[in-house]
Image (tube, rainbow, N blue to C red):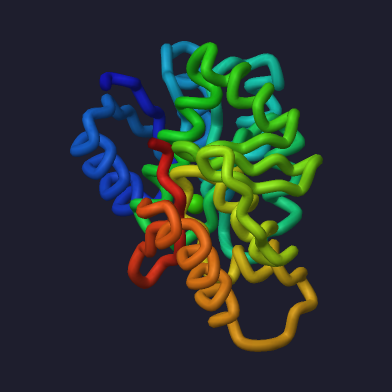
Length: 233
Ligand code: CA
């Protein structure tokens, strides 16, 4: 693995921390500490992926993104401040492929980078997109057919409640991305859900009983202190 990643981030300590982690993972890394330099480097360099902070001196991240243009082929992941919902929306509209909210767990950032490179780096992109368009998600011998609202393992039908089904679908749609309990709760129970976040753990337990235990696999992984993930095989 020798993909070249550009980090545009004015908090030099954070940039350095991410750089070290990325180098450790085998990536090549370049850094820019303001928007103008970041834009120049992005336009002139050959990067596999760009990590772009939004609050930047000289040119902010959204402006950098706009100037790069939607046709720019390099996937961009935005680093955003908490609660900056409008920035996230504007960023995704301007062509970013993903965003991550500060402060983040480095494992989550690494997972998002892997996913972005996989989805946007090669022909695998078209294939994965095609598969999700049809609403069919797979993991090993498990098949979740969204339009048919049906889940099978090795062809054997698994009976899930509606919320178990949604939880499984969300996890399968975000393979390799660690989802927090809050995120899962929001997707499974809705934004206005009031109650305990441990209902997420309860649904995970039900899914593990119906799938992992029944078929002798380990599908849903717990990431201690963060949440849950289904890893691509
Ligand atoms: Ca900043």
